[in-house]
Length: 121
Ligand SMILES: [Zn+2]
Image (cartoon, rainbow, N blue to C red):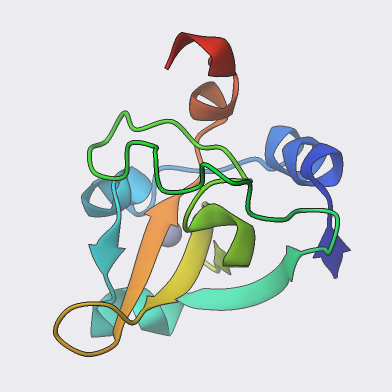
């Protein structure tokens, strides 16, 4: 399925997660794929064409658990959406191709990071 921002947020709000994976705490910020994580995830969709990078896409916090999520910023607009088969947690996924070769990166979607006021960054 292809999702716009509203549909993504609806999906996130309507997804019931459990604590079987302890919230995938290593992936509260962008982290590289592990074999364990890969074995648990299935792709559920991607962001649709209404979501495009804005001119200021790189001027945005990337690292850190509390880095905000904005779909018009790098790397969110190009992400796939995956879901854990065990705990239902939703993840962003993209292929990081800068630096030392390609790395598969994942980050847990957290509602509160979308709800920050974009004007305050
Ligand atoms: Zn899980």
